[in-house]
Image (cartoon, rainbow, N blue to C red; front, side, top):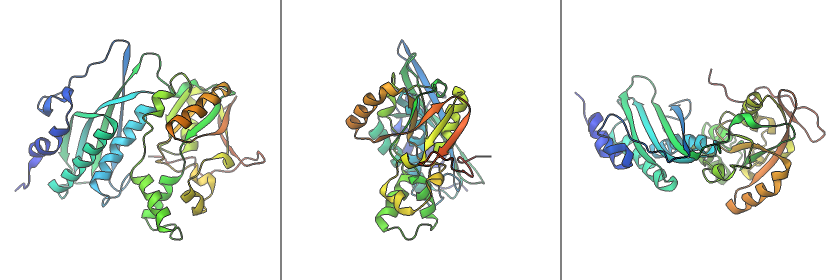
Length: 321
């Protein structure tokens, strides 16, 4: 016989307290969302699977926060401000009320940090691995959205923060890079488990960036998405790639770090004349932003060394299929 709170008990106990006004207490079939005149809703969805995107023994609160944050990162990548989210969970029956309570606690923590609220969703049981899906909604002034398709030859390619940390963090969780000091390993693991969506930077780049996305599958692969959408090529200087001290200490090749996923930094292009504005924005947000390459005529992405020689890359990034 079923034990614990059950589906609707879990909703009342753990998720209804997270609901925003449009969520109607999670007692109706759908939510109500207002959109101010002259604005557009920005909507995105991501799913994560146990054993693929997170480890089954990862702390539930961190799993919840990662799930929310990867979606907030997509909202930021359009230059939008996050508002609400919908949540769907497919959980094994062995994942009990305590797991769900800790998961909901993580959501509550990030709702306070990022100013978003739950407005609906669904919950089901599964005989397979846990699948968690979240749909985030944001808003942006009409015409200010930053898409992938706006890059032009001559643009500078920029990236926020550092790259490769999450790739290394996952490997560290699996026992790799044992020579790193404990503080470095902990830093990399935290970057994997708890990405930092650039929700302040994204809207601030409206009117500055011509094309933008967040780095989820790997910097080179994601820059390739910009190039495909904009019908241009890109050249990336490997020595310019921004690395954390922990990533540098790992000794991993820069080409591998540039193709690792889960960074959730913003990757964007902007005209050279915008460089001073970007540097001022970087200083005001206390967030490093690094020029790593240029947009050119043609197609594809090339990674080059200090002498301009192309570096062979086995795989540009993570592929789901």
